[in-house]
Length: 134
Length: 372
Image 1 (tube, one colour):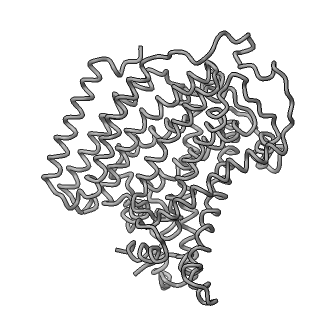
Image 2: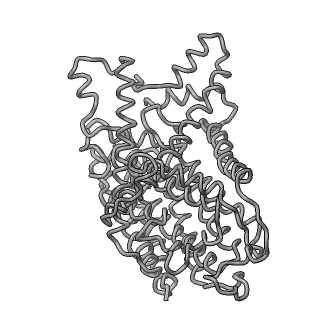
Image 3: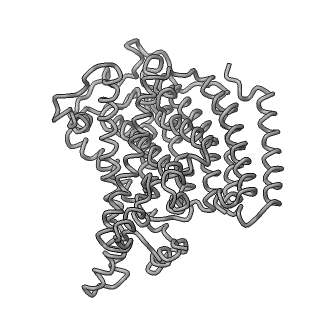
């Protein structure tokens, strides 16, 4: 395929086993410069004033009542749990989808069973009210 | 035969011609496309903020910014300067580490994802084999940043906003990933370049949007929700939560959130263009004109012109989508949190699963049309 030429071309001088990931690493370093530069530039330019009033928590102009680090709605936790189930499912499906053209009908039926099990999980969570907000 | 402008090869060969080692030439090339894409991404995000103001103004029959430069084009620059010289206030009760790192963790994955956006056969920072999967996976880091910001601020509005933002982005990530999955199945690859190549050859008729209309809609809705755009801007909800997790941020912290959201919007539009609208392919294949004029596709001048058309096409498609996103903002009312989660879990998720299975079935039945 036309891609192989380029990948081989890139592969020569790298020390990495996986092609192209050296770019990812360098790009990550380069990207982290952006927020650092923004913070440094601002630190040089911005005014500095102090005062206890200034640093109080904003609560629409009222005196802040208590802390915000309190117990919060359990609903968020339920959604996070259901999310983990389905996110892992999609991760498992990625290799299947990419290799699907070589796998044929049997792989389709296998994925059908796999997804059916997860649909049962979704129906269960739905019936149990894990997906209800109110 | 490889076609298309390959700047890397030209650059490396030119340097090797000067007697440099191939490894050195490669290393010298490495940062160039990265810096270009970072500058480009920043510019596109700035243009997006200007467009947002101008289109919003037009939607409300106002004029919008007009004094800073012609048509107010310098207003984004003024914004950046204003935010940079603003005082940064960290609330006394906030957690210093979480509060400062929050915006950084939000903006970094967005910037990093520009690595895989292709503008031509070789006009991509690196054509990773995992391509879109890299984007799907690193974009799930952003909710952690939102939680850090929301929880670290020690402010009730921020806490609610942060939790809502995290719940929202995880809810829409699953349908988004499933929509991408159907595309990956049709292309037999996760590489963004392969995905565009698979749509090439038939002009506008070959684009994935015709074969994946449902996937396109799922992806677009989920992408808007991931970007926290109206009608899904609950985490920020100015009227109820002041600005959600951004409430306590001023100056740079706020700027990073703001930049992050627009960078993410531009990125999503670019990816919709790449995955569904044929990426750099023109509605009528450029090759038709080239051969019609009796030129060769490998002619250097033709290659440069084709590459320029490719970049213009990608950006044009992305900005068209951005325009729709801005118009949607002023057309659709905001949803409630329960409606938002219902839409994600009870509608988009089942539909995305069915779409995936239908794509698989169609691929088995009509392998020619659905990518072999």
